[in-house]
Image 1 (cartoon, rainbow, N blue to C red):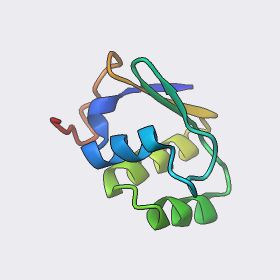
Image 2 (cartoon, one colour):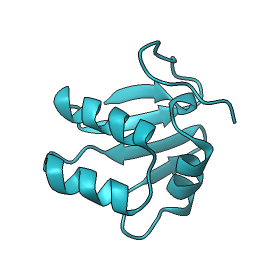
Image 3 (cartoon, one colour):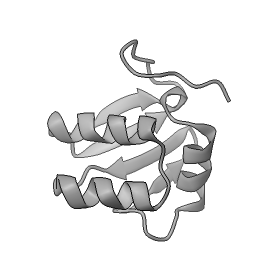
Image 4 (cartoon, rainbow, N blue to C red):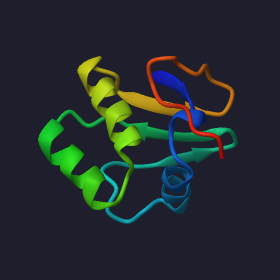
Length: 91
């Protein structure tokens, strides 16, 4: 599992994750400090689906990184570290 700050996703991404958008690829688990999402290995189809449901380019970049690193889950947590090589959003 990859723990990463919620500051690396846009406010719109956070709203979509909270609403558990219908066609999101995989189960979204909303917790007190953010969201956990599974990382699906079928790269091309999953990335296409993320674009179709309106996830931001920043979110898709994080997801692609998680796929490349073979993470099973991404845990977006408000208390997790912010990483310098990914964009940070203030919302």
